[in-house]
Image (spheres, rainbow, N blue to C red):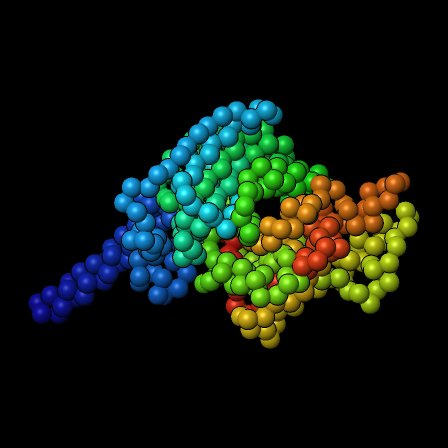
Length: 376
């Protein structure tokens, strides 16, 4: 009898533990907030995976004087503008989305939303009254959702654009399932470059710093934006900065950030009409990616690059005012007779900027990184 009671007690305890673990997993997989923060470590799991909180509310006046307007621009774009009167923002954060799918899913397959993206910006601990936010989408539903989302946060200025069929450039013309096909990359990235340029030039006012963030980025390393701004302020040659982009199963996700092998004459000299594909193949074989380049560096280091990715991308705003933008075609090697052989979108912006003062490209060293969603 005693043996039976002891067995029943153990079984009840194990059942209780199993039930607790099942409920814990279900809650953190389907919890109503649908936040992006994934249970990837013991501390984050046991800590309840809390979303960030904005720490600067106490410094704000009780009644903010906020102006809002909406209109249709000359090209048919629907434009919503919101601004706290009297603020003078110096940081502009920009992002493109096609629709709700653009925010992706992470680890627990929980769909992300614009609210998760705002959580991500909030996690930087920036004073949002110093931050302008520019978003462009091809979805009217996402546009309306974004208007409601930004209204709850004290961004100094918000510019929202709804361009039907062009919110994310290529995203509106190339199906999601085809977006990584090699034969479509030139077209896809040219259209993304066009969309980036539209949003950047339409939104930029008097800000000093531009920070691009892809919609499917879910996590920043601590202080990454402040570190980028700090380097741009301390060194006159720094104009464009990116960072390592990780994914759960991929240490270096963004292969658009790299350095050229300058010992190969084919890659640094003139490329003839008959050598374009040869040069592109040679570059693919010999370029060095950022995960190799930042080995043995520390958090205070920056390493020169020839090409950057756009998962997170800092640009000194003065460069844009001087004409730097994202090339919509292969700009490197372009002649009157043909397009170049590399350098579309982010892979060409360093080349475009290279002849201006204070325009060199770099990657942050050490542990600085962003994390990409597990599923796009």
